[in-house]
Each structure stands twice: as C-alpha cells, then as structure tokens.
Image 1 (cartoon, rainbow, N blue to C red):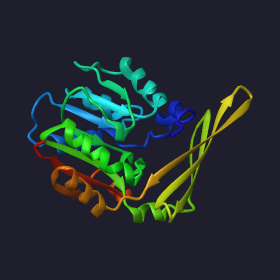
Image 2: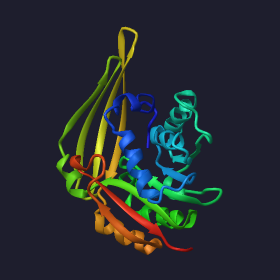
Image 3: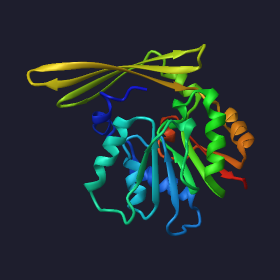
Image 4: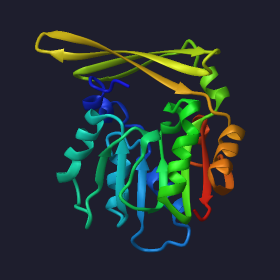
Length: 245
C-alpha cells in the first residue's frame, strides 16, 4: 500500500485521535496485573505515536509496519519529548510475514490495522502471533465492524492544515466486502499546489469470523469489548489470551 504522500502528513491529519486514552486502554488490556517492564509488539504501528507513548511508560516496544515511509516518521520522533529508558525497535515487515527475534509478553494492533489485512492473510498472521507471543500473553486490537464500513459508502471526508488538504472518497465493494478509500492529497509548493493520489482498502471482518480465526490459531478467552476509546464512532475491540505453543 502506498503511503509516500500521506506519511509526512499523517500526524497532522489525525490530531483528533485519542492516543493517550488508547495507550491507557491497551496497557490495561495487555497487562491487567500492572507488572513493571513488559515487552509489547505494536503491529501496524504507522508513525509510531502509540509505540512511543507506551515506551515512555516503561514498556519495551517493537513497532512493525509495512510502510518504510511511515516508519521513517516514527523513527524521527526519537528526539521528541521525554526519552524512554529503552527506545522502540522498528521493523519494516508485512503483517502476515511477521518475524521477530524472540517472544513478547503482549501484542496490540490499533486504529484499523486489522481491517487492512485481507481475509486470506488473517490465518497466517494469527499463527505467527501465536508463535511470537508468550503463553498467557494477550493480543488486543480494534477494528470497524462490517456494518460500520458499509455505512461509510459514498461518504466524502476532508482533512486539512494550512499547507495540505486531503479528500477521502469512500466506496464499499460488496463483492470484496471491503471499503475502498480514494484519496487526493494536495500540498503547497510555493505559490502552487501539488496533487498526489493514494488508495486504501479496509476489509470488513465480522467479530464472529475474527473470534473463530483466533481460536483456530491457538488463542482462548476471546472477548469483544465495546467500551474503548472511539467505540461511540463504531470502533470495536477484541482481546484474546495466547495458549501454550
């Protein structure tokens, strides 16, 4: 997926995302006992805002994303704000090709990351998460339900800053069961404006399908949560516990 024009603008266009609340919520889901330390995987970490927040709370973080442009922005945040004791490690990998150096005690995937995975890639991703997550570790993620994605069909959305403008056009494809975002991105270039395009696809994964896939991959105690940050805007959360390998 092409993130070349969007990556340097992503943070400016997502100032309304409640990152601090998400950090609180995910940290509580992954570590209900409040144990110190802990190593987490932030899958589909994007520009790393949530990764850095959790690192500054004392978590050892591995951020994985398929976009080198988004990861470059994430890495550039090393000098911003308080420095964590252990800086995050960022890896450029496709989610379904996840390959870590060892195991982690918790894993999360926020802000629709799971919606970006085609259905055929979910089993392999979850198999790899089962392998790299310690027994008893928690995997938690948020996603938009199929009904919510269908409701966005035909919608047009605008994000802007003084020097950039992004127009999102949403079309739901019933055959693919996916929402396709056509994006026109305009950035100021002196007295003129530069226009670039991107296309994003979010797949409609039903909660019961995700639950079945988690159980098949070796997870248990799958719980659907509807009280997390952004739930009022259609965001759902799933939490599952990893079984022994």
